[in-house]
Length: 309
Image (cartoon, rainbow, N blue to C red):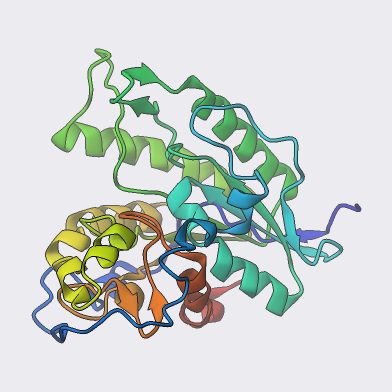
């Protein structure tokens, strides 16, 4: 496999303007339409029985590194492997949720796509901590450093960055950080990460964290097939406006383009778990591949006019 001349990196989060975010769906969702009670479609895709199979390809082919394990030896290259333009996806499992959309973009543009994701390993240069097991996930730091080096070596055309707002980290006293201290640790770490990516990428795109569900959607739908509205999540709980403003601020500070996907996923209040006949959520916090692929058109419309070649 020859080395391409140009690269597009998907690192795990997109960057548009703060104004773009504030004009989109926010936690204050009084302008959103209500959700009508309805039966779960009999032909919903994916089916509730096969839901766990509807994952992005890097999860199924083991390119997505599992929590605190060592890096994969697989090439993790998708799209047009012989293209002179390469894109890379980098981040945690919420970044992985974007893979179907970005792979579709890579295929449409005849670009090479390199996927760099690790479960519970946030793109920000911070200590990854597992509060359930009460351990620091040291392999995350090792993996992240390796991924950033790979991005620098690729010198990509575009780097997509994304990560979940649901993370735990430690402060200098080795205690679990909370509140403003936790946010500041993340800001400092994300500044370091974005500086590295922006220095090696022609374009850096930061994807704001998407709306989440407060319930395990497939299980809830199994128990509420006559009224999937019972499985919906109020917009002010699905969307964290303050966190999105924090993300967009960090992106802007570092010269990255921020993309806010809230209105593409939450189109009502409460946020529906179903879009037409497509099931949106794989569980409470991850998107089905069937739904995620539909995010490619609005994503490209949002970023295309700002891409530098």
